Amino acid sequence: MNVLDQLKFDNGSVDTYFIDEHPELFQFTLSQNLDEVEVIGPQTPLVTELIPKDVEPPVPHLQRGQIAPSGWRNVLKKDGPEGFAKAVRNHQGCLITDTTSRDAHQSLLATRVRTYDLAKSAPYVSHSFSSLFSLKNCGGATFDVSMRFLHECPCERLERLRELIPNIPFRMLLRGANAVGYKKYPDNVFQKFSDLAVKSGMDVFRIFDSLNYLPNMVVGMEAVGNAGGVIEAAISYAGDVSDPKADKYDAKYYLDLSDKLVKAGTHILGIKGMAGVLKPEAAKLLIGAIRDRHFDTPIHVHTHDTVGAGVASMLECAHAGADIVDVAVDSMSGMTSQPSMGAIVASLERTPHETGLYPVGQYTNLQFQAFSLGLGEKFDDAKKMYAEASEVLGDISK
Image (cartoon, rainbow, N blue to C red; front, side, top):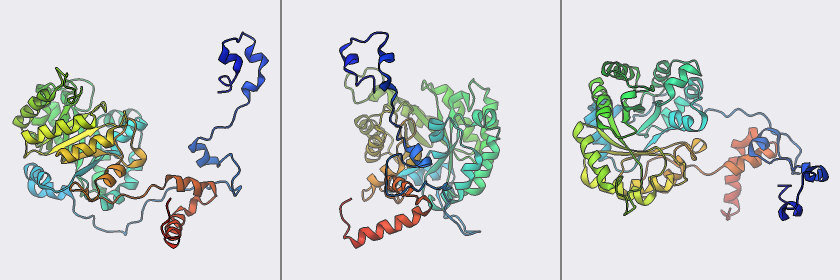
């Protein structure tokens, strides 16, 4: 920025002595990145000179022995995959899958979140998010990264989380005939893997092929079905079905695929917008067309927020007839992760597609103000006092 402020540079009249003759170019203003403010405090004068304390985020307390509320996994265990799919389709409102424990940190943190960290929050998730359709916590890159970088056993992770979350279905991603690896595996390997996954606590298997090649998907669908899992065959979305000039990836292309997958026996029909290019208008047209074609089959839509349209697209999917959408908790959402859970839950509140989850307020700015004043360890008290002050002052605009 210092260089750009120089008229000589702007006029294009600089020479090789430009930097030597202008030492002021190296007079920098300290960065005000939020992470630095969080750790060492603001570098601008404020009310206090207090440095924020090192505060470990507390995990909400649960009473020992407290039984988790019934969830969708209870329905699955009682009614089986077919009855489960029927119950999902008959459900009033939009169901939510939380991708935080797999796809979100795979997209943002190279899948480096440890079993230890996931297990610490698991009891709270089990009790406070019991209405979730599923938790996406396995498959994709998790097996590779767990063994190669975290030096953990992915099966032990699955079993540990299942002990802590008995009521919410777990969902994983299978890459067609590649399973969780990077090459094509024999059919019997796929079957044994599916058997082990179900035994370890997995429930819903999203099966896709990057080229939408049906034979590769059928291998996984049959293996999962034989193992007793819920089959969610997913169509990989590309192109733009809202473009009237689309001549390859048009509505007919996706409708034909959906026909074949339903005929092949999928319990749930997935739409996998892996590139984040499912635009709101296209989402409305595509999901509406599939819903009209397959009224009795649950539709589950996945996207990434790469282009920033994820929230709008998922809302359109819900309004067009999707039964389930993928989201991530707010702090792990956006960019290459999934759309914000809080934004979608709040947007669907008091509509026919209400999720049953309670959206909390936006505390980010208040938190940084509290930390900048040396009150980080008292943030819970600050939130309560903020609400009380707002009420005393007549709920003023803020």
